[in-house]
Length: 405
Image (cartoon, rainbow, N blue to C red):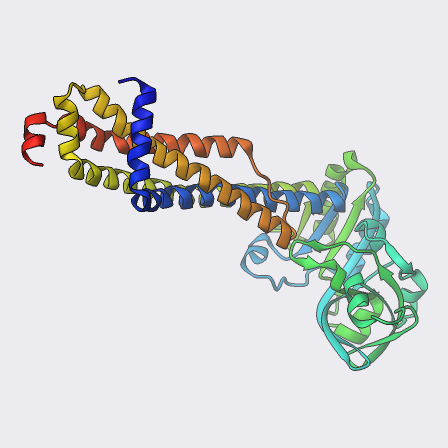
């Protein structure tokens, strides 16, 4: 019997038991869909992080407070950086172009009868340049606003859309902790950056934030959440990082572990890439287990099929079918089930990836190599788990098989 005839016979036998075939394929469908969707979403998360950091710029440097141990253990970082640190970095580090210190705090703001919770950021005029975050309408904070502790605010685009539906926000007044601020500008749409929606932020002068919102909490100066810095060019980033670290060690009189960290955009991108790759690999392995479970299901059903078709096997052998003919037919049945389930599972996974791309900010990637590997693995699993039932069918004695029918 040639391969085409074996394929036709295997297909007709599977079609005769549609429900059993469909349920057997289900494990392969779920396994392939899980693998494809996991890899695609993992790539999407990595792409999103890369896009955000590229939009931020390769020359940005973040100086964050706290020891490395503290930064890993808690999100409430100790305030070991002060405004004077930022001022000294700006004046003494020759490879730095601009510095923008920040004080961040969640606050409830109100406009007339409307209230919303936002991230309130106290900063300086250099913020727009360092963070590549331009103003859409109005103006940004200037040096006079900072020097005079002025009660002015620049709001994110989402805040403007939410609170000021019928009128322009420029010149309107919002309240923060019973303090009135005049809106002087609206930022361009920026999106999220590592879980923080920058379109839902309100920016005010750093001095106003320190003196009227947060309050002075340190005898050493105005405590900062972190410091943003911008190197003169890409080639200066490494030099700037080295100079900042040495300068802060001298200022903080550090003899052991640093009470601050200096992270570049490239370092953050590498960290995010490693985390995303590790998580994707782990989830892919977990999803791949379902493929093995599906293969066990294929073997189980094929063993049942061999038991039910004993008389058919005996009759075919009595009419001249060889062991290789019987072996080939059952192997082909197992491979058809696995590959068909694999194809449907891949289509389901691609659909899930597309849906995630529509309803979320992720840009999932559909990897052609992942699709090919998944399909090959499905066929391999079907072939591997189909060998035992096929061998059992091929070794049946025709006389015993016919007598047991």
